[in-house]
Image 1: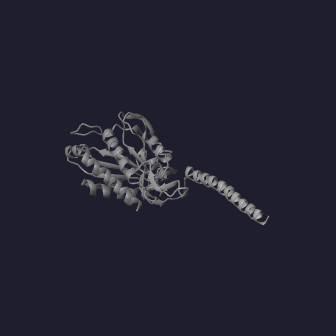
Image 2: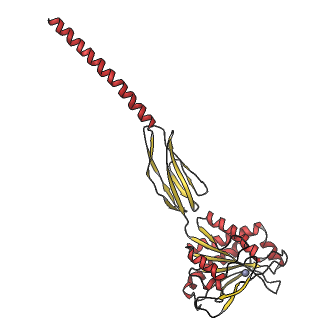
Image 3: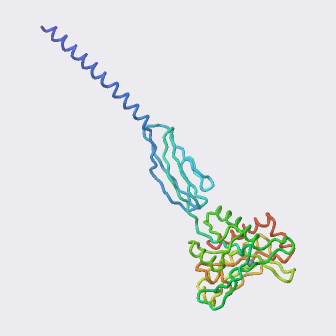
Length: 321
Ligand SMILES: [Zn+2]
């Protein structure tokens, strides 16, 4: 009986072992299988709005995988990201940032905001508009809605074409420098009065407005650039005078330094409709004289336009410093 009892115990232990092992193996196998199919990346530290010029380090963790996390960005023009997740915002726009580990990944949508919004008004349009409008809020004095502008004595190119060509290049450079940009027009065939341009810039959320023009004179030898701003005695926008004057000074200085154009200085002007309807600091940049053959030809070249654009942007940068 004793040996039978012992045998019974041995059998019981063996049976228990088989059962427990038999149970244990499949459970373990299922757990492992589930873990690998559920490899997961979670972004643990993120931001969805970042200002151009700033950087931010994203963090992520993994579950069910030993693969390391790598970071990538959908548009490198808008911002770049290091392997460690440090994102440097460059240009206003939207991107998707992805953290990837093996086959698992997680994404976050990020909006890069501009440092400031800059309004650019490319002066004139393909056809002037002689209908009248008040030169400022409550003004009895009226002026043509849009003058036809000057044209190149040598190039024969009309001012409205030059101002748009430069403004489109200026927009790209400002975007590259982290600003947001609004243009009052991006084609020549429009009909927008100077008052309407100012109201558009005001409502756009822009911080400042730069009106791009070129000069003309009956004296063919006159050359150089100037920046026009409203005076402290301006009946409509005297409160914008100080900031506009600062902007005018800043832009004309950088502009002439970069282009080598003669600096004709800053000029207070209170008769300009597009300035008088503004609610944000505003200047008119007269880039040079289209009535001077040499300056006219130079302003048509791509290399000089690059200098124009850099000069203006340097001026805007230093205005904000
Ligand atoms: Zn003009």
